[in-house]
Image (cartoon, one colour):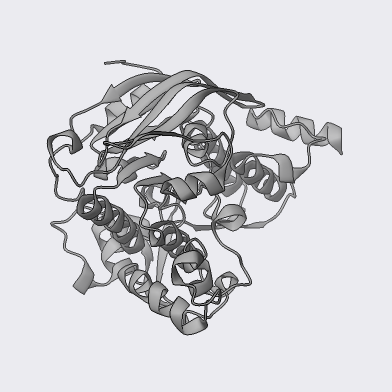
Length: 400
């Protein structure tokens, strides 16, 4: 079995140790294991549900090549995705479901991307004059505004090394109220830096601190997520299933779990008090559920992500660390989540560190830092950012 596993992984170009427990693999590696398991079974009908959600571009292209080979061999494939460019690249027919009903079925050459988006979100919510993921209205750079802006984030000389992940002496400053995107291929270090800032991972060397105007610096203890939360850092993790929510608890309990000290009365937090604090966030994020007491494990993936985002925002953070916050959500929800992050940072002066390989997510940022092999490769400071230039930079080409 191990020998066969090594061969399958070699065919895919992945260095995944056959002896490693899956619980110790990265999100991307677990995704690869799931996909290769399905493809190695010799099936005649294959169901792929958001298969590229955690894959970098090279792995996506290898997956698409394998799908085309299977199609040529007569394998039937049902491909579920919110990424319309993927649908147009590898599918022959398309079906759109909205609110549990089939609203469109057609051969792909007969529809446009706008047709699909309209079917997905409803005519009343979409105009062909809008892009799928429009950039919110630009604001003034943080440094030019606001006494209301939060503290500066200073990352100094951060180094981190583990199998498949490396950061080498990275330094970065995010000014109060500034929104900075970090991106790169899988394993570039962008996501790891975000986890270190949020206290979800500990750097081997280096320092992370918040510099509060007139109050001095607060050095964050490595790997101390609770301490980072107390310092005012809200966190939207990459893997919502593992880190984003408690499945058996209701939506209100999950959303308010970071602020129980604020809403407790005589040491007790009742359901009404929880729901009163959770309801405004649930409404703003258009959370669809049977009620705020419904266990989050019963919600759709997109609504689970909304609960995860709401939990991060409930504590009124001075810095939001978000890792791929729109992964696995539909077009309308993606726009809504990005708009809420834009609104919160604009109105409160909170800073944003947004780590994502979803380039549409970066539209709300004031600047974008590109990582290659654990180091800062280049930086884009003039939005709107050129998509092709970002992709080239992520590949290590065309530094500016």
